[in-house]
Length: 159
Image: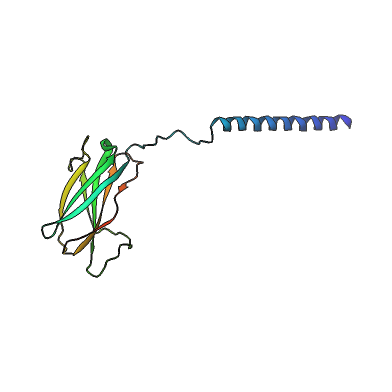
């Protein structure tokens, strides 16, 4: 009987020692990582942009002139979308959700946004005779994981 008990006790002690060693090894590997998980990610992600300037002005009767300045990885700019939402005369709701009814997509080359150039101008003529429009710019990247760069939603009155 005495040998069975001593064998169990020594086996139990051996298991405890192995568990303690495994815990120590796990802690040492965690400490060397400094709390960071995953591979390092650069601060300036490739293909990201932000709008430093976005403006619209009335041109002629039913045309709007747009101008914008984009900052970021210009070599990875795919396209710029100008989104418009017509606003009825009695609706002036800046807190309402923006639901664009018209989208015009322009490649970076069409707007001249290549290399060092980060500014563009574009005129859009509308034919729905709305007195006001809400609008914004969207910059799309060629980098598939980069988020779209959205300008603020602005209001423009034509008449």
